[in-house]
Image 1: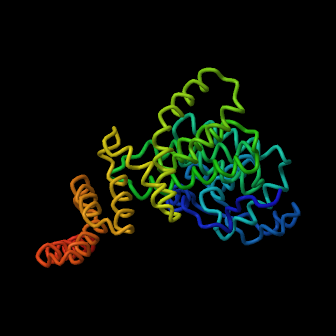
Image 2: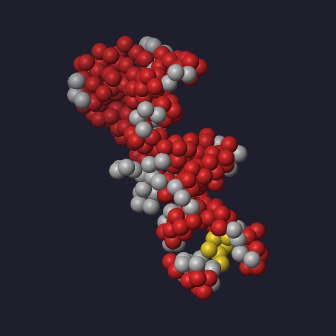
Image 3: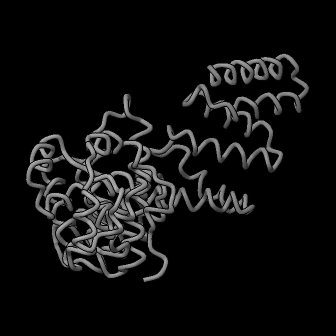
Length: 335
């Protein structure tokens, strides 16, 4: 199938967090005579990945092909750019048929259930190296990344969480693209879009999920979520109208939410103030940007806009006050 994810070519967000797994392997090699005798000339000079507990057995009697294959698959999944990865995949193809992908997916699922996130992700990735459009491998890998970031602490692992959120979202999207009738991907993808604040995309994704799933419990859950999304979707519609230049149409929607339960959502006031500024409603814009700073005191663009608006009103004292605040905020951001 065309247009499938290529782990060997794409930017790899996850490999940095699989370095420990990749580094856990030690290396030995087959003898050249053995490789020639077995018709494995392509493995000459290729290091063989071994776990610590494999070393003695490999040196004495060798290891079963299944064990060697397991090590190679894990290492390829952990680091698709590993110099010998191509040889390892060729070795796997030599000894196993197409069912190997299903075996790797099963191993990924087993480690996912055991919360061994690194090995789970590595097995799913190795399966995708062998068959990039495999439905269960795509979905399993997306789920493994999701479970991994859900297990992390946001304060101490913010960058890692973001990497795995982005990866899981991308691979749920691959599932949706390649298997448009596969409902489970839409379920998780809707939550991913919701967490990104993409309310309309979440709604459309969950609408598709409801069209595909007969499970009453899951349907009820998503129907409840969709009911909660009605106002955020409407607000997003208003913002999109503003961004497309339809200022009065956008304002007509957003102004109805100023005194609603969304009154403390600073982006609402920011977009309203920006629209007022574009329409030269200076006093309303100033009031709106002040409301943003009341809710988000370090919002630098609102501070900058207040400096410009007070300058328009020939209020030099306040204009200078907010210019100085912009400088302080920029300095704090650089520290």
